[in-house]
Image 1 (tube, rainbow, N blue to C red):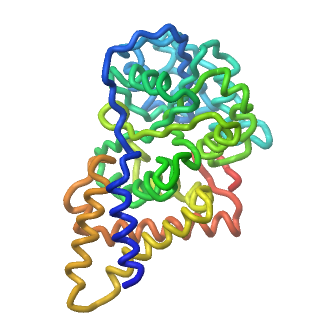
Image 2: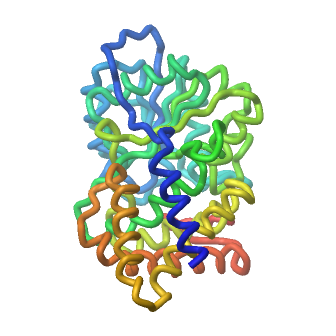
Image 3: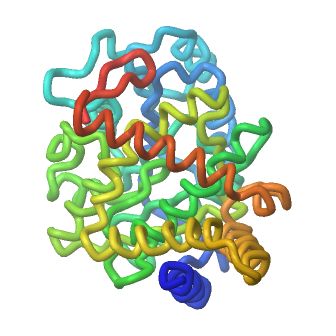
Length: 352
C-alpha cells in the first residue's frame, strides 16, 4: 500500500508540474541566423526522404542541410543524392576506436558545417512546417541548448509498447526538469545549439565513447553553466520510434535502459523505483479495493501520456502487458550492461 500511495503522490506532482509545456510558436519569426541542419543516418533509406522533404518546406529557411551517411548497408546515400541542395558526407568505415557511432557521425557533420546554429536531427524525425521557426524562437528566449522529445506517431501495433518507456523518459529521468530547474541531460532526437557553445564544451568529441550521448551532452552544457531547456514536440515535431517490428523496439531500448536509469542521479532513481513499484503494488494486492486501485492507475497513465503519443484506450486498460514488456526489456538491458558489456545495434557492436 505504501508504494501505491507513493505512485499517486508522484503522479499528481507530475500532472501539476507545468515544466512539460508543449512547443508552441506564438508569432512569425524572422531570423538572421545561418542554421546548419546535421542528420546522422545509418540504414535510413525508409526515413531520410521524408525528413529532407520536410526541411524543404520550412517557414524558416536553413543555411545548409548535411546528411552524414554512417557506412550504411542500404540505399541511404542514393536517396540523399536525389536532393541536390543537400551536402552528403559518406563515412566508409566504422567509427574510430573509442567513438560511439552516432557521436562520430554528428561530429563529422559538424566538421563540414558553417552555420552559426547547429541543429542535430535524427533521420526518423518528422518536422511540421513551423518546426524550425519554433525551435529558433525557443533558442532566442532561452539560449544554450534546446532539445525536443517528439510526439510518438504510430502505424503498427507494436509501437504502442513504448508507453511505459515514454513515461519513464519524460517524467522519471528528470530530463524535462520535473524535480529541478536544471534537467539531467538532453533529448537526443532534436538538439539545437550555437556553434560557439558547442565548440566551448567540446561537442560530441568530449562524449565520444558514451551510448547516452544526448544525456551526456546536456550534462556537459550544464556543468559549463550553459542553459539546457528540453521540450515535448507536440504537433510540431513527431517521430516513429523503432517502426520496423517488436524486436527492433526491444533491442533499441535494451541498448541504453540500464545506463539511462542511473543517469538522472540517485534521487531520480529512487523516485522511479517508487513510482514503478507503486504500479506493481496496485496489481498484486488482492483485496476489496483492487478494482479501484487498478482503474486509478489506468486514469493516471492516460492523463500522463495523452500528449506523448497516439495511445489508445486499450493501452491503458491492459497496461499490465506494457509493464511486463518494460520489465523484461529492463532486465535484459541490465544483464547486457553488467555481464556482456555490449549490445548489437544496426549491425554494430556497441559497448555499454
